[in-house]
Length: 499
Image (cartoon, rainbow, N blue to C red; front, side, top):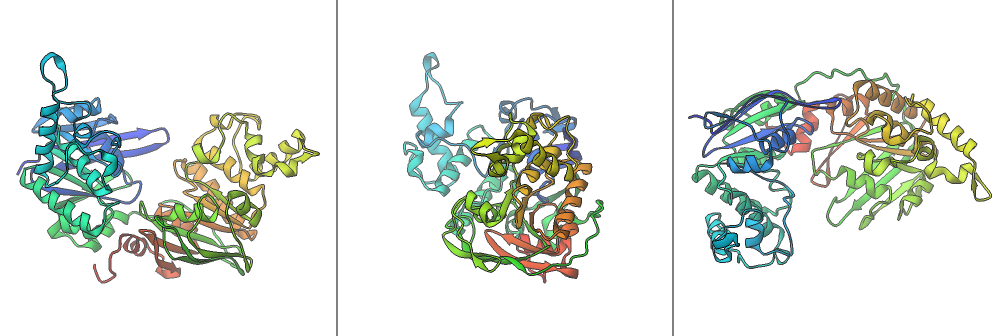
């Protein structure tokens, strides 16, 4: 059988990052191909190449034997390639039919929208996927699963031949997931070629006919699902060598500093409990949607848990705001430093001193000399590379922006520092500097929580690793048990017996 769509030699680079390097992918009519890989493997980038959002730097895209380019999303849609994303943009105030045909509604005489044809077309599409929805219903009156069906009908309204489903079950209940499986079978029977992206191995083995594995932006292998085990897929996902050299650490941990018990949130996480010790680096690992960042944001007072207790140094800490978290000795370096960490437009020294204005002011007036001194002390410790401390932080590289954000919070002299994806998007040299500094902080007695999606980083820097899945802690590993396979198995919900 010949594939409907083939990609060969696809490469895509961004400043400082090679997202895809010479990858390949084949999609077959009437079959589901699962695209498998860790966070950062290149799955989202290949979807954007397929849908015309990104243009590849090299390689070919072949549809029905013809080489094509998708210069825009409209071009990809016109060629019959459509994507159903986890968070497809729909419009609550429009009807189901209007959402389905938005941007390409059927038109009659004089170029006016043919409302009757639009409703009938929407009804036909909804019936084809077994969706019992009123085309005239307002989207705001529908549930999540029904909105998902509208998104699928919208994708099929362009006469799609290739359907990309990116984490389609993330917000669905068990019943709704079963209905989605039935829908996929319907699409297969219609001859659609389906690319299915999921972190859930039970879904992959339930629904896929073939698999393709990406790792670190590279093609690893492909084959039929019936001929591979979960253990083999895990090995393909994580089978790289740890090519970074991490700083040697003594791993001398002290008394408990932070104890969390029963932390729960109505929608994000449940029954979170762990202990962090003095001088320890505690890693948190999980796949997309595991709830790691949400837990950290609750600890920092950005959101509030519905229940649970937090103790710092043995004393109960009630954290209802970020100010109370800082006062209690907890600081948080967010993953999105560009929007949540650094204040672009302000100079470096003012970014560093923002949370410590009381320490650099007298009688209500800021002392610029003291601001410079405080900023200089902490940026020098992190080996910040900048022309001057009055330089706009927005002009720094990603790695140096990260150092400014870390310096900002260290200046508050915390007891616990939470680093959320501390080396995401920065170059190898800056990664090494951040890792070295993390080791120094732990050696000085600071307690560190590190959230990371990079397995080598988690294993290379952590004393212990907590693994989360779907808002819950599913494993805690340390010592010899800290292996790539153990982390991925726990994060993906794979039973140990499956090899």
